[in-house]
Image (cartoon, rainbow, N blue to C red; front, side, top):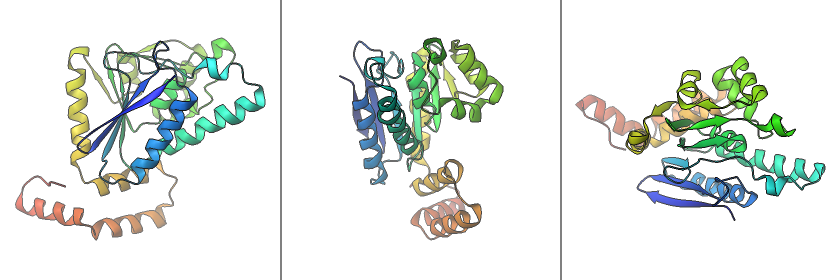
Length: 251
């Protein structure tokens, strides 16, 4: 049975994908747990960053658990797997605070679709990416194709989906699929540095800056309201005082 193992350290919540013997294949109960954590984080402003990962040194996720979705009739599959997963992925993508997918091993199919919902992706040199769906008569149904196209361009996304070939960490970084590619031996240190940086900036500013990029906002409405709210916050006061005194702001 799959699960998400949660660990809190200061302002950072780490969610570890765990489905023993299945290379962290995404089971329906794991999606439900992810959704519960999203709701919790949206109501807890003390969480400044969320890291989604597999077990240290192992796979991120081999994809959607075919043992669960394979036997489903078409209508049930469309409703209880595709629609259900897409609603959760959309909520994770629009989570209030920054999110990071930490990828060390294979990241295939639905697992790659989930990683694409994170704001940033950090990969070790051992990471491998692939959309294998067309080889088994399926498609990336959790909006993986369009999300990938927004990151790497239409041609590369079509290549990845239609050719179903593996993409190594170096190529993924060159494409823009991952933000940071690390040596295996420095992965944890480099990941921690990135997460520490995310957790050190103004949490209110980070949330609004993310909403401006990720959300479907009307700029004429969003920016006046967001900047007004931020300018009236304690974060703005801290930042301006730190700038004036030439010190680093501590939020």
